[in-house]
Length: 141
Image (tube, rainbow, N blue to C red; front, side, top):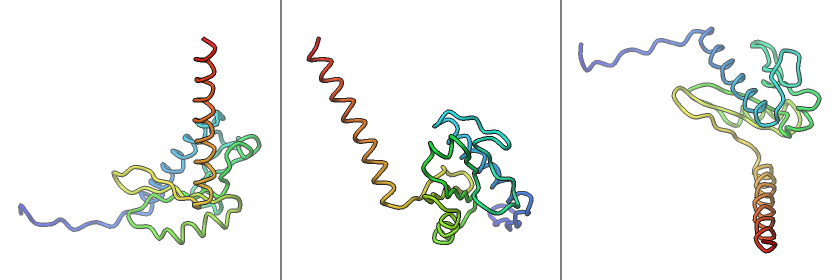
C-alpha cells in the first residue's frame, strides 16, 4: 500500500562487519595518502581484520612516527555512544581519535580539544610562515 511505512529489517552481522571494514580501510587509505606510506598487510599501515581486538588501524615503523594519533577507533553505525568510543580509543594508548559515520553521511573525527588546537597552531604557523616567505619574495623582486 502506498504511504505505509515499511518495517526496517535488522542489519545482519555480516553487513555490520562489512560497513565497519569499509570505514577502517577508508581511514587507513586517508592516512596512507597523507603520509605517503602504502597500506599493506603486515606493513606500516594496516586495517585490523574484523573480530580482532585492538586499534582499528595498525601503525608500525615510519607510519607510527609520522601519524600522531595511535589510538584509532572507527565506528560505522547509525547511533553512537561517543564516550564509549573515546574510551575504546584511549585504551589503545597514544593520542586517541575516533572516526565515525552513518549511512549516507560524511566521515567525521573526534579528538581531544588540546590535540585539535595543537594541530591548528601548527597549521597556522605553516600559513603564516608561507605568507612571510611570499612577502620576502615580493620584497626581493
